[in-house]
Length: 342
Ligand code: SF4
Image (cartoon, rainbow, N blue to C red):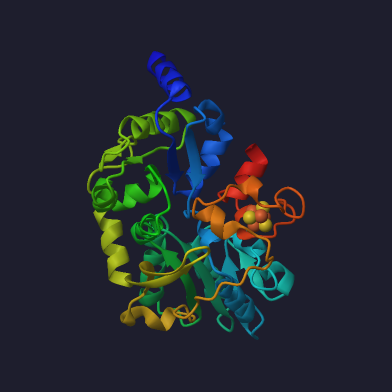
């Protein structure tokens, strides 16, 4: 406890050059704001929200395709709840009025598909390294049990290429709170190459207020050093989860993906390999992104160029009850988290 108090004092009293630190993970964004971390930091330490909320970075063409599928006869789109309210180019899945079911786990899809073989169930599979192993297991199950009526519309993404793009676009950043959940799967060394190439610290962080403060202190202490530090060692080990990595590699291959606010990025998406492609519902050409509301600044917020209150719609036309952009929908979205906890 005494050590934590020291850390708090150091972070509040920091008076060096301004540091712009990014948390890339949506769960970190929510936890940082819920724990009131920005208010504990010196004005010279700025925390920026990154592109790690899967719902927020999904492009409008992905939502539009889900809507098209939900309106087809004998077809049902299955998804997690957050996605239902994300605006596509014109509507949300809920407003479109197609056939949609909400689940809590991708595996919930299987009994539905078995009971109703005349319906094609399309799962909206989006997420990062953390959730991709579950989709790999789902696809293996589809293969083994020969489900003919289940498909995936994927918007699966991986972190390193998007961080590389942010940094090579000259976004001024001085370090990253590296995502704890992603690192559980991918291992401690996942961000090592980026840290070295850009000479920036990456600190793998947990999600409690204390863990976040410890990680931020390490980031500040190691500013300018190209290193990965693990401040979440009770959960993240050096090699990650080799079984999960192997399962993902067997089912998915890397490809170009489109990100809200960042456009197309080579090597930042995962797609079903040829062997499993019969389970794909058309995921390979979903690149267009048209904001539902032209005033929405989600793209800038996800890339650290703006903060939620910079958007003129924040808290007025756009609220968690009436989101105008993806960042206001999920509690992992910067605008939603800022609104609920800011
Ligand atoms: S407040 Fe709403 S409209 Fe503005 S950037 Fe956030 S999600 Fe988009």
